[in-house]
Length: 178
Ligand code: GDP
Ligand code: MG
Picture (cartoon, rainbow, N blue to C red):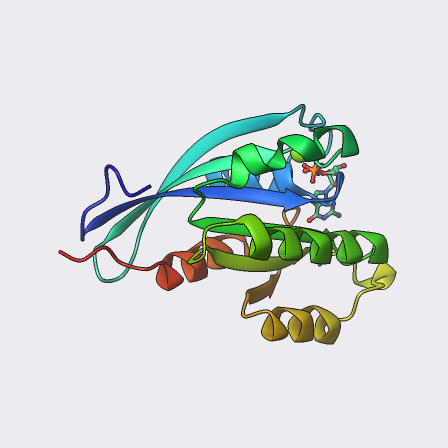
C-alpha cells in the first residue's frame, strides 16, 4: 500500500525471492549496511530491514525489505511476503542453473499472484565467480525481456551493481499523483 508515501517521498514494500544460497541476504546486507559477511547465517522464515535512497530529482524512496528464506518448507509462506509488495527481486546464482530455473518459477508465481503493477527485477548474483559461470548473461537477459522485467547481474561480495539495482528499481516505480 502507499500509506506514508507522497509525491516526493515514496515508501515501498520490496520482497526478495529465490533459491536458498543464491545470496539474497548478502545483497540486502551489502545494500543496507555496506558489508559482506561470508559467514552470514541462513535466513529462517523472513527478516526485515529498511533503507532510504535519494534520487537525482530529490525524491526519496524508502525500501521496506522482506528477505525471505528459500527453503522448500517456507514456500507456502511466500504469498504472505509478496502480498502487497510494490517490488519483487528474484535472485539466482550465475554458477547454478537450478537456481535460474527456480527463479523462473518465482516469476510465474508473482505474475499469477502478485500485485498487477508490481515492479519485477531479475538478478543474477555472484557475478564475481566468472570462472564458474553456468548461466550466460544472454539467458538472463532474454528471460527478463520476455517477461517485462528489469535485469542486472550483481556481486554482493564485491558490491558490483548492488546500488545500481536499487536505483534502477526506484526509477521504475509508479509515482503517486501529487
Ligand atoms: P540466501 O540464502 O539467498 O540468503 O543466500 P546468502 O546471502 O545467505 O548467501 C549464501 C552464500 O553465498 C554465502 O556463503 C555467501 O557468502 C555467498 N555469497 C552471497 N553473495 C555472493 C556473491 O556475490 N559472490 C560470492 N562469491 N559469494 C556470495
Ligand atoms: Mg537468506
